[in-house]
Length: 292
Image 1 (cartoon, rainbow, N blue to C red):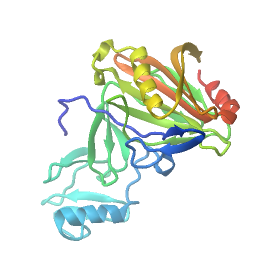
Image 2 (image 1 turned 60 degrees about the horizontal axis):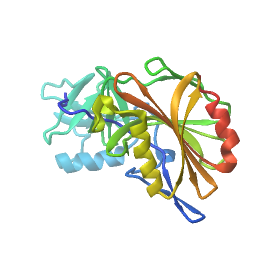
Image 3 (image 1 turned 180 degrees about the vertical axis):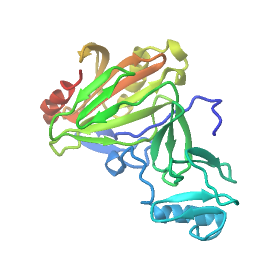
Image 4 (image 1 turned 135 degrees about the horizontal axis):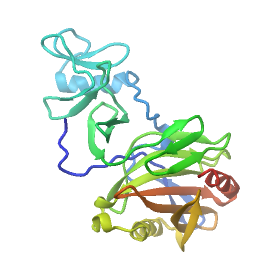
């Protein structure tokens, strides 16, 4: 399996909103696609044959549906056949170019998702390659209908009817630290406003385990200022019986951005980011009230 000498991370994420006078433009911050284009956390294999075929053809110089040892494909997905006819199952495989892949319990390559393997979270690209990022000592929550529960972090959320939950895997940043985002919940007013949950590892910052929520907030504040937001200040608030440090920012009087941050586990920060148009605030308040 891949080496674990460095701490790695994993992200999905929302989009940033840059303010220029009264104009608001959606901008990407090192993200290759918006959440609207992202797939669910379920490993959906076999739906990207064109991209995979192109990658495979470049790597192996021919069709991967051919018989014999090497990469094979059927209507379900891709697998790797060894010389003796066997194939990897529920394990890692290192290709000749040094790329790492993981095969599920049926022997098919997983792609475009994250997967908890041996207690760590790994992110896999669209072509199936491990993206080189990993989170350890962290556990994602579970969705049961519109209810989210995470026994590890203690966060529980009941999503109101009509709100849309989007889950995926990707990487993003707070300062120079990569973050892991579990989900985005969009409010039902058609504006694209919503709230996301992300985690940042304290060891990604210079202070290590001594890093504080105040420091994380300061980095986030700097980023928003560069995007044109006016920083309104910080305060301590209670959400669902838990104490968060809150950063509030205003975008030209029509856009709001609030970050709620607290430390969870031994060395992670749980960050809830609410991005919404001012007219959407009643919807956002209902969503936040669902945290318990």
